[in-house]
Image (cartoon, rainbow, N blue to C red):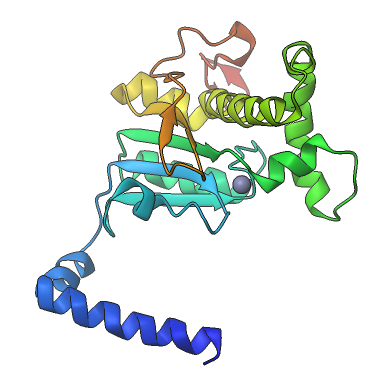
Amino acid sequence: MEVYKSLLDGNRKWVQEKNESDPEFFKRLAKGQSPEVLWVGCSDSRVPANEITGTKPGDIFVHRNIANMVVHSDMNLLSVLDYAVNHLHVRHVIVCGHYGCGGVKAAMSNQQFGLVDNWLRHIKDVYRLHTEELESIDDEETRFNRLVELNVMEQVFDLSKTSIIQNAWKSKKQPVIHGWVYSLESGLIKDLNVSLDSSSELPKIYNITTKVVAGTEV
Ligand SMILES: [Zn+2]
């Protein structure tokens, strides 16, 4: 059977199972969503947000891209973030990377891969910021794993630089931003303990304190 047909088949089986185990499942979800978590993860097919966290449809609002990046000019990410924070009022934003990430590995190399190189350039910047630590690690696999972790930490930091997050922290003291890394080998998630819930530790240059209205500073 062609793959796409097996997906449709799989869908029908899933609907049948859901209706049998929880007859109100679809009616309930069709009414609306109120997830408490926004997930920023990698597009990698092996890291599905709901499945690896044992959560259900409706529990997590999801944004995925190659190497779970928070790029401040990415309208897709910014729109998802704004909607999640200001309309869904999520309480947590989780950046979840994963060891063995092809995007991070590509960024560590000097090879050309095409258009994606422009996206991965942001990871090279993370490498440059942490060159000393990374180049002190002799084992290539260990260095790769560390860059995966550092990349997640930098994306958590990048989230905290956005006006969306800073304004939400000021007005409603949420969301809390977390950095996690998933292991493809064990299936376990490691919390990097880099959670942020205020601008207090943000370098001053990124701190947004005033709003300019019609050219007047207020
Ligand atoms: Zn990946």
